[in-house]
Length: 174
Length: 195
Image 1 (tube, each protein chain N blue to C red):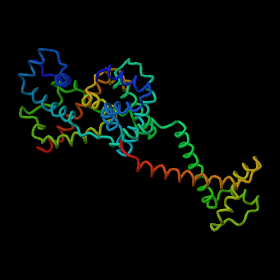
Image 2 (tube, one colour):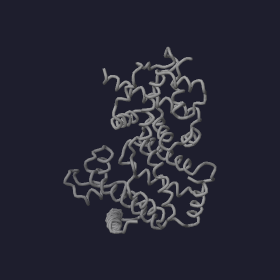
Image 3 (cartoon, each protein chain N blue to C red):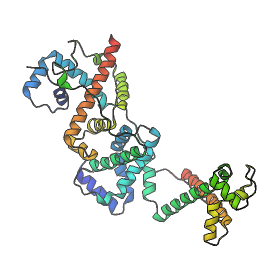
Image 4 (cartoon, rainbow over the protein chains, first blue to last red):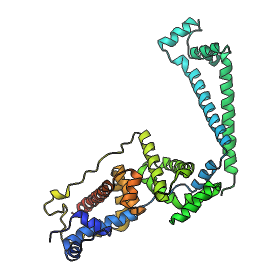
């Protein structure tokens, strides 16, 4: 009989080889036995592979999320949005004078802005944000108030996050 | 796991006993961890993914129809969550594994033994495991996943096919190719060392 194919050797180790003739050959053929041994080493290694285990607090974190009040969850999402808005406006106001695009320079000129220099005060930078100005105009609202509101919300959201963090650290573990 | 146990547990959670979900996590976190570890190379992201998977299981618990085992359903959610994560990270999911065609070999076996003991017999078990683990990390994703589900969770081809949305024949073919690839790699490494 011909030597067993690799698939047959794997089937044998999976205990799925049903062909008696092949099983008999395997028992009496040293070459096939040696090939089987090599596969056996792989199979044993696969069963004993070192495993990664999740952090021990997985259960607590999942239960905390699923037992959370939907209103509380909405509040947390709102806080996250406020942080993002606050950070976006802050980053824009700081970086704007350095973005020397033609469109921006034109808009500055049209508004007769002070000279564009890095020592431009933050307040002045904010006052020449054309998109915010347009937005404020549309709502008949002093757009500087928007920036102040965003900054206040950012502070509130960060404070809320820090309080939540402190609470979770002091909460008893399940 | 007894399906009746799972049914009682699910009914209890759906009935409002949220705390019973801890038992689901306890029972199936090993399965989820096996899959996540095999599919996600970045260790720092694995804990968050495990958390997301169990939250999805909880949110969709009412949709489980008992047409498959609960473990298969959970593993399917784990698989899909990991695939979505990898797609977002633009990781290639469909690489192939190059294994020599067995029929091309003259004797129906591409590796011809010396008639002596297998070179792998001479390697210390711990060293072999470490080498094997390194080699598993090198093989494409679907092969790694199938190896974990078959050898660590002892799932059938059918169950693995359901989880990965693959035909049973493909699961079997991938499994055999992956094991053959690993055997060839180990033999090549240790035969070379012996020379």
